[in-house]
Image (cartoon, rainbow, N blue to C red; front, side):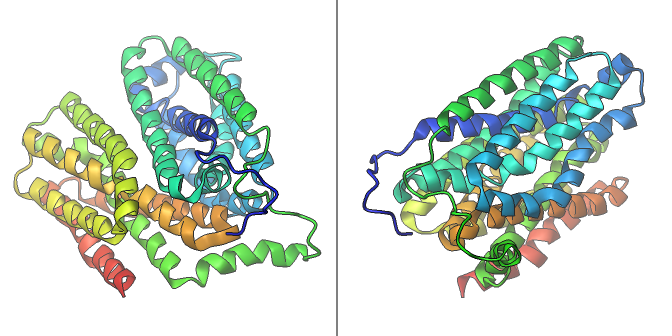
Length: 397
C-alpha cells in the first residue's frame, strides 16, 4: 500500500487507537451477553419468560446477518465516521437500558440499538490497524483487537455471576463502561491514521460501482473465499460447544456450575491464544500450519469428549480448543488484511458473517442430537474433518 511522502509516519503507530477500539469491541460483547449468565434471574426481574430473555441475545446474530456486508461497505467508504457511529450506538443502547432498569421495553430497545451498532464495530477490526499501525505491527494489533472481544465475553460471564441478584446495578455498570470506552475511542480517532488515508469519496466513480467493487474484490479472490470458509468451520464448532456443552456433559455427571467453569476456561484460553499466537504465526509465516493445528485439535477434542465425557476431559479439551481454535480468527483477519486492499472492511465483515453463519448452522444441527451426546460430539468432530481439511488443503496449493 503506497503512502504519501508528505506524511510523517511515527514508527510505533497509534496504540491508543487500537486499545480504545479493543475496549469498545469488548463492550459490544459484554452488552450482547448481558443476560446470558442471568437468564433465570432476569426473567423474574422483568416478569417475562426465560425464552424472551434469550431473544435479547439471539437478536444480535440475526441483525448481524442482515447488516454485516452493508456495514462493511460503509466502513470501506467512510471509515472513521461509521466506526464512531457504531461506538455511539453501542454506548447509546446501553444508556437506553437504564432509562428504566426494570422495563423490559427499554431493555429490548437498548439491545436492538446495540445490535445495530455491532457490525460497524466488528467490521472495523482490520481497518483500524491498517490506518493506525505500520505493517509490521498489524498482526499484533489485530490479535489485540480480537482478544478484546473475548475479554468482553469473559467480563460478561464474571459480572453476571457477581451481580445476578442486582440486575439494575449490572446494567448501570455496563452503561458507564460503554460510555467511557466510546469517549476514549472518539478522542483516539479524532484525527485520521497516518498509515492509510480514509477513502476519498469524490473520485468521480458511480455510486453503484463503488458499492459493488469491494464485494467483487472479496468474492473473486479464491484465497479469501477459502479463508472465510475456514472461519465458518472453526466458529461453527466453537459456537456449538458453547451453546450445548452443558447439556451434552450433564449425562456424564458434570454439573451446570462445572460446565460454566469449563466454558470460562475456554474463553480465557482463547484470550491468551488470540493475543499471543497470531503474531508468532505472522513472524514465522506459518499461518496455515496454525490453522491446520486448530482444525486437528478441534476434531480430536470433540472425539475425546465423545469417547470419555467428563469433567477433566472437558477442561483439557476446552483449554486446547480455546488456545488454538479461537486464534484462527485473528490469523485469518491478518491474512485477509494483506489481500483485501481498499475492501478490507467488507472482507472483515464477510469473515464475521461466515463465523455467525457457521455457528447458527452447526449449533442448530447439533441441537437435534442432545439426547445422544456421543453422536453429537462425533458430528462436531466431522465438521473440521469433512469441511475444514479440504479448505486447508486448497489453501496450501
